Length: 493
Ligand SMILES: Cc1ncc(COP(=O)(O)O)c(C=O)c1O
Image (cartoon, rainbow, N blue to C red; front, side):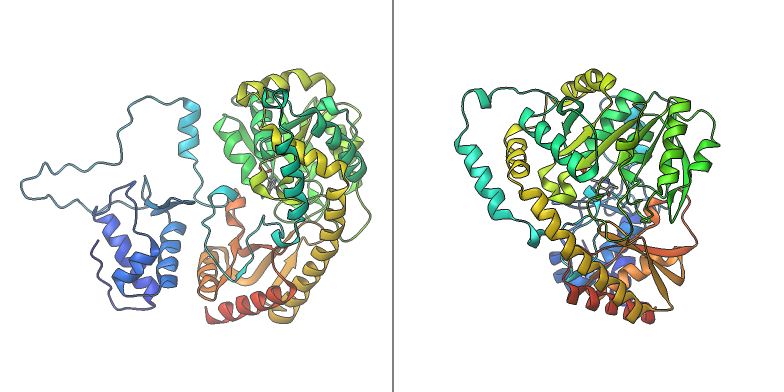
């Protein structure tokens, strides 16, 4: 690939423009792979960081897509018209827009492709090494009792017997469902039998099961605005009509939900609204439950980081207050332990156990059992609760450090919201318009800081720039330095 830099402005901008030109002129066709940043940097005579920044801008603007582990590719549909393709002398002159489909795909698949995310979902966020990375969704890997985990894993693996190698119950290993029933009662007040628990592949599979069991095409399903895109992307692919309900510092505005006609169900994050951080008050919890009872609607309660609470009185999970069997409660090991475990749980009301077990069986005949049994041992041995207690103390100190750092370096220019619970806060930058969110992100990346815009989580993005700041994986000193660099980057804009 031959690139000509135009010599104007920052190097990464020059490289970005040169690459965009190459794409629009059709020298790189949709689906084509771009060179790795290292070789591009060598070829263009720039630093690797410059190449990374140029790729990020192309990614932000939709010219390329990134697939973790496999590289950067020209997007299937470009945000602007390609320049007319130069006709190669003597050639056919035809330009391919990527591989022609050989099979018709379903309406669901078409919706999936049409809405494919450009950014904002955990599995699609480009990963690069940054010294001060406020990437949301990362637990503190250094705090994990990995030795204990590995010891329990080794013990279970050595004990593998013919029976344990066979198919198990698709709904999950009985040991884990028993252990989870006890843990969820103690930690989150969840009232259920082990039979009501389905072990899923992360909470993402729980969302998928709810989408298939409870939602028909054209059903109206309410989501918080802003919301976790892990809900909206699959549910709209299944044909649900999504209804946005605003949130405030107390979480979902239940009054606005009850004013909506014909809503089949709602997906909510009551313990720590994602991403704004509000905690649903008891009064609103009761109002929500009573709405669900009157309308025979379901509530999918996403309790993704409810264990981490630093202020105020503990609020019971919605499930613990549900008397009419309307709440489906889901949780995940991704925040308590680590995301690659891909273990989550869905607690369903008794009358729905059979149909959800069938849906899980049809999806995958059950999750792999070895790690389920290890997690059961980890819970029964008391290691999980010990780990959560310790992590809560450490995360409380990190949260303090973040609040202090924002006050010290960004006081007056930005404010931090939603840190009463969980593992992230939401930084609103007062004077920066939302349309410039990516600009600050790139300026931060040039200073080795990872900053993640809040826009992808909104259906109607706010006028102001905001960033989801995950702080659990950073030390207190790094949090302070990271925020100091954000302030410096902001000043440079
Ligand atoms: C709001 C929310 N729910 C759930 C999850 C966890 O998803 P999973 O269990 O599929 O890893 C996340 C992860 O980032 C999240 O942000």
